[in-house]
Image (cartoon, rainbow, N blue to C red; front, side, top):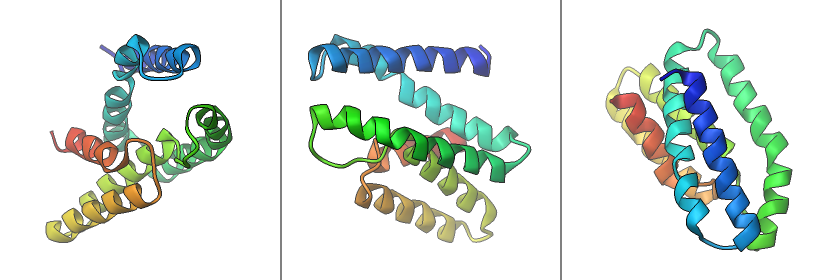
Length: 143
């Protein structure tokens, strides 16, 4: 299966998840289908890190999408929940950063500590999926 096909599956899955939220307002059967999206996106981030030609542009694109999509994300989630969260692009960005730091530091203990620090930061700034999202991205990178 190609990367493009995986992205299409993830986008359709995510759309159904959000559609279910709009229609039913809480957890529903659409969410079961929608939960396929994040693992696919997490896998794509780890693969993107390994195969990108320009890591700086990759980071900048993720950050730009994170900023652009934050306002619609906040508008949508404010209907369902009054708490503040950062969208999934921030999770993907922190996961990519965790992989980069781990990969580039010579001392792997410092790399692991950096990973845990980014997990703590993810929880403190309330990114979607929190530390679990960073962990999934990192696991896909390591396997």
